[in-house]
Length: 170
Figure 1 (cartoon, helix red, strand yellow):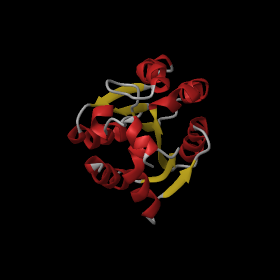
Figure 2 (tube, helix red, strand yellow):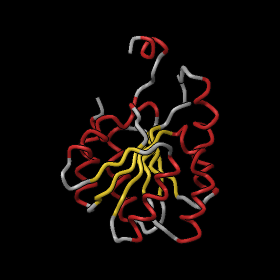
Figure 3 (cartoon, one colour):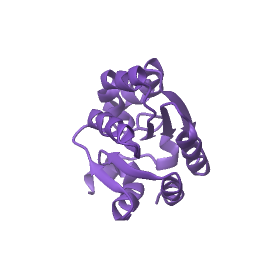
Figure 4 (cartoon, one colour):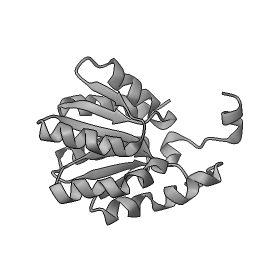
C-alpha cells in the first residue's frame, strides 16, 4: 500500500496539475490509479521517460501544470532532454520512485539508482529526497510552488524492497 499517494494526489489537484505523464511503475501504482480516475486530470502513459519532458514542456507552454512520474532507472533516459528544461527555464516537477538502494534484488537497478541524484543535478534540476511516507506530500507541495525544475526522490525504503520471490509470483 502507498499511504502517501492519496495525499500527493490531493496536493496535485490543489496545485492545479491537469496533466500527469508516467511510465508504468509499481512504486507509483496507487498515484497513477488516482490520477487516471480523476476527471480533472489527464494521465498519459509514456513509452519512455524522455517523452515526459516534451509533454511537460508543451503543457507549460500552453499554460497547464504537469508532473512526471518515473522510476530511478528511467532517469538515465532523460539526461539529454533535461537540457531543454535548463535552456528554456521550464519548471518541471518529477516524482521518482527509487530503485537500486539498500536491499535491491536486481543488480541492474543499482548503477542508475546510485547516479539518479547526480544526473538531475548536473542538468540543474533541484533534488529533494523523501525518506519516509510522511515526507513525500510536503516535498511535492514545495516542489509545485518552486519556479525551478525539481525532482522529488522517494526512497526505496518508502516504496518497499522487491524480492526475486515477488517477481516470480506475479
